[in-house]
Image (tube, rainbow, N blue to C red; front, top):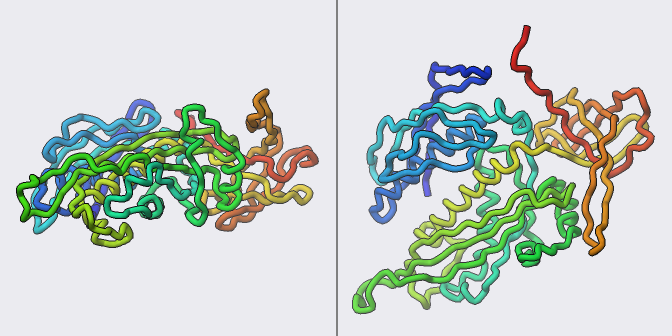
Length: 398
């Protein structure tokens, strides 16, 4: 699927009463027309243009606008922290060859004006998804669908301009069923194992719960036609903060797409032939929406890390350039203390301290910081937590 985005910033800048400002973007989205379906191409071009413009500007999307026949049908987009797109207008749309072009004018308020923590990246471990009902993969023999979907999600996140820093963790199969059960009785040690191997604050787990065929689209009497079925795709996600063991986000996605192959046909889910089908196209659109939703879910959360080593008044931490850390930044230190309830379930408790350190040296995945407090770091230990201190901008300056 070829998708392109053209962005050009106009000279118009808008100011609001609270001191925030927004700017006009001119955005051109382009989507392929598949099987002559122009309406779907219009929707994809508009949604892609809006999404990419928002991510490019630093805004944080919680949903894309409703589109009917390629025309915007709502006046505004909702963005996390109550930010809003003030206007989004279709300037032009046309078919060019085998693709559909849509040009928008859109007024965006950057997310960092609403949520200062969005300036820092969140490292997320993308684990191998699991196939809940394996017998449903018999149609097409697509028993590796969960593996390839996990890799596609990683590639999608890696290709988007967001605050997400995905880290692949595909080598090991993880039993995630307990994480999605009604009792939600999961093992925190699994989360700790993943984060220790990936240096990630967040761990994303998922399971594909439905890939069954729904309806046959063509008649049994039309023997000269190839079999075509509607096939479901449902996938559940849960995101955990590995430092607190807290589930910070969970959502299920469901879609359908045309399965154009005969029932006896064996399909390679890693092949281009599969990923050019309508069914795979719907999966890819779902993964793009997951990326958007995840970015919205974590953008306003704090970027925390752990102390890896203590040497007098100097510490080494597992945050670095990849997280957006810079020289001179101040970090707050907190003790991490586990608490066990009567059922044996463990919770992580954070005890804030008055200790602060300043970053003096940065690498890609770690940094060196020195004590700036009047008291020594006697009580600071390995695995204590550090939090980036975000300076709040004043509304007025004299």
